[in-house]
Image (tube, rainbow, N blue to C red; front, top):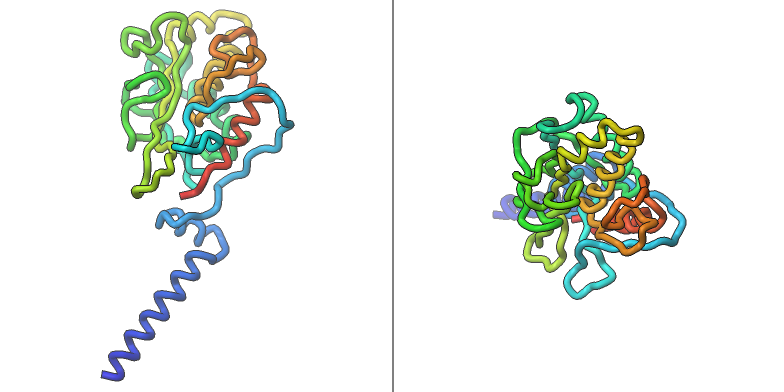
Length: 250
């Protein structure tokens, strides 16, 4: 009986020591294990340092917390796929084009992205800024307004994310999302002198929505609803992106 009690105590102490090691242990392996177990961890990247100023807005805020935007988990990679159907270039050029824009958003937010490869999935939207689905990787695709009604009218693209509560917590976080670009607009821009720069600006704008930025009233920001010649993120956009990279881990 005493031996059994000692064995149980040794097992309990071992479990406690393992728990402490997982919670506070240094190194990439322990951080990865904490993330896998869903008990916190360290952000995978750091937001950029940008000068304050400009105007930005967020798609969603935490319930009862108007100063807290809904964000992606900075301790987890944002997985994404690309549907190449309708893209204006071949596969290699299209993937490079998308990855370059994603890398720019990543460098500002500190959020890390993981490209999983091409997919046959087609875009489907529940409403503006909210695609259908909550478990799938982010989908970046091209479509026409006949397939995606959110592209009707003078709309070059749509982007957004799906927010859910985890584990009964009231805290919302984005878990999936999408960017859908208008095939006809991109085809028209393909033949223009600055067409590629405008294509890039459209993609950056929609990726801004994907990570949580909303529209603003200032035409000097890339997140202005209409493109009036702004081709890069401006100061307000950058400050909003930095804030979205400082979300909770979990």
